[in-house]
Length: 139
Image 1: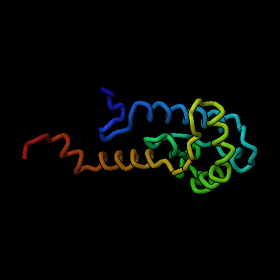
Image 2: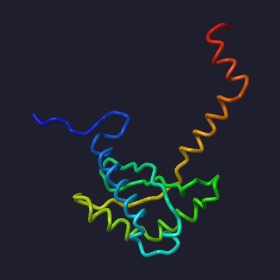
Image 3: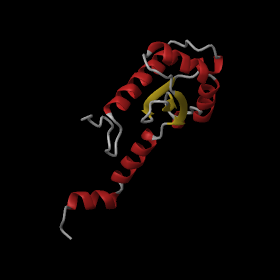
């Protein structure tokens, strides 16, 4: 009897995680070495934070942020637009480095992880929240 190899759980499979991490490394290397022939893209240092891949491995959502983030004056939308303009060349580089049946379609999104971390820090530094956390279950 054939074994079901597809995950039925709520999270991504090990293969999705592995492929996403490989794509992230390839894109990071390509952007670091400025291998794409676009002066706008090469003028900005871009951090590739995470890549999530669809279950069929045909779509890769790439979460990016200009180095220093939006708070340091990085224009996130300009970076995403530059990446989208060069999607074909980036996809070609990913396909060249990886041994997949299909080169995944790359979709670029702003990485909001650091913004959420700042919001969480701000929340925990609030006096009322700190008092509740330190007070425990006393009432």
